[in-house]
Amino acid sequence: MKYQDIFQALKGVGDIDLSALALPVAETDFALYPINCNPDCVDEIVVSMLTEARNRNRDSFLTYFEATPERTFHWITSSVAKDNTRILFALREVGTRELYGYMGLAYGDAGGGRIEGDAIVRFSDISRPGLMRAAFLSLVEWVMIDIGIKEVWVRVRSSNPAVKFYNQCGFSVEFEAPLYEINGSLGELVELSETPLQNYAVTSDDSLFYMKYHR
Ligand SMILES: CC(C)(COP(=O)(O)OP(=O)(O)OC[C@H]1O[C@@H](n2cnc3c(N)ncnc32)[C@H](O)[C@@H]1OP(=O)(O)O)[C@@H](O)C(=O)NCCC(=O)NCCS
Image 1 (cartoon, rainbow, N blue to C red):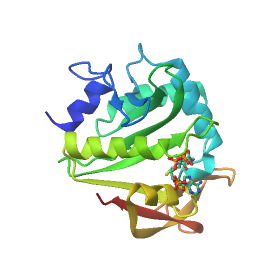
Image 2: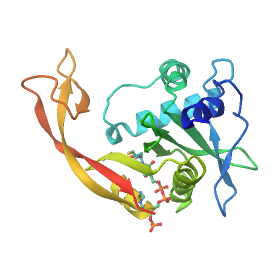
Image 3: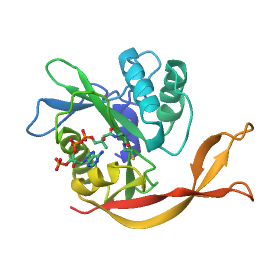
Image 4: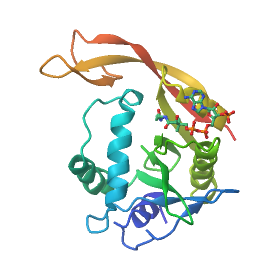
């Protein structure tokens, strides 16, 4: 079975439904539960988490927008559902089902040789040191060992303290790309892009680190 079919099945939008499966996070009471992208099965509490956490961490990502529950629901049930190289997981305590954070995989290539960790965010205000790292490592090991994808990368803004988090997870910077500011019609910053879409695009102080996982 191709990894794309497995992702769709886990998201509840494939030919078979594997959305009830979860990945345990070793030596913890937590597990990674695939976020269901079927419009009839989307969990409102997960939508609230994704919306709130996206707005709280606006400077961590490359696009700037105000997330709303409606926009998040639409993103899950259209973009994420249709993209068979992308999957999101909610990190929950197994006993209580309480949400701790979320993390995903995206931008996989057609042949299953390479994929990226994507949208790795702690939602809970109460930190359990090392839990996000343990969960992300479980996800990375699952996609490499069980699914068979050989390379896992992350792209992260150079100013993001998460660079240290990724270092501690076993990722190292392989190369660095400049970022350009893309403005909206009112001059507001809407995106940092690797491609200068406007002739007069301003180079950002931030660059983009491409970090690769080394086992
Ligand atoms: C990145 C993030 C998920 C880490 O969550 P966390 O709860 O701190 O993760 P952990 O407790 O598992 O941290 C593991 C290690 O990473 C390091 N680390 C994590 N966040 C850090 C930060 N802000 N600054 C410095 N180091 C950090 C810690 O040193 C920790 O190592 P230690 O155990 O030796 O202390 C969290 O800070 C977050 O949600 N950030 C905002 C969203 C974001 O930027 N995501 C990445 C987008 S590319």
